[in-house]
Image (cartoon, rainbow, N blue to C red):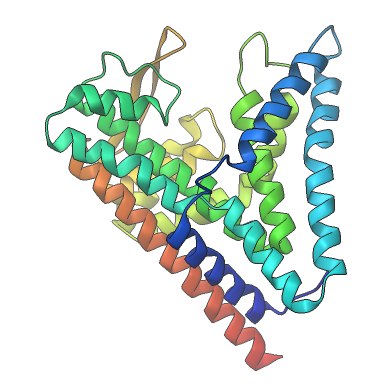
Length: 312
């Protein structure tokens, strides 16, 4: 694959973020919709019988390997300038920073205006829990949790893998994260078939999630964030979401987690964070935390690139 200098990769990362900031996700049919349709059809065909786990592993590689392989061939075969363009476009595809704000900011506005019904509809579009009877606190908690967790999934994980493996790395992360969101459930249907999607996502997210948690801590109430990360993260089901959400909630001095209805079943999740119950202002604060963390990541990439260039 075309080997880019750390300085060039940092500049391309900044360009990718600028493109996402200007244009967001494609207004026409997003390529992930087609990917999701293909994944749904493949799962329906392969998730049968007793060998569901091996079938899930095979399905994961069948969906991930071809597009990532094509991306790898493109950046290797194309001239330098065109390869750089492909890197930027692939990072743009993998990012969802503008989309994150576009989905979550309206929830804060609706709650601030007292339009609870509209806030329920908006929140239901970004979470899998039942929001039909959720009150202001429950909706605020859901929006804060979504901002913190998707900050990692839609921004920092993609940036990390872009720094490691360029555009193909960012593409791999986004597609793997999508399959985890589709198949990584502990339900009778997906428990075995979705095992590979969940485990591969855990592996790919292990380092980015902890870097995200550390950045959240540095971008807010650092002492409380470290405390919540250290004492609460292990109580969360997800080994990667736990550190991200605990550190983020501690940084914001807000309480998240607790009871929520999933697929008609009330689940009592551990409480993360400390301080105040969630309100619309905490939703806004969570988005600002993600933005500060994004700037910190880009600054760190540029600083590392400059240091690498000067010492090399």
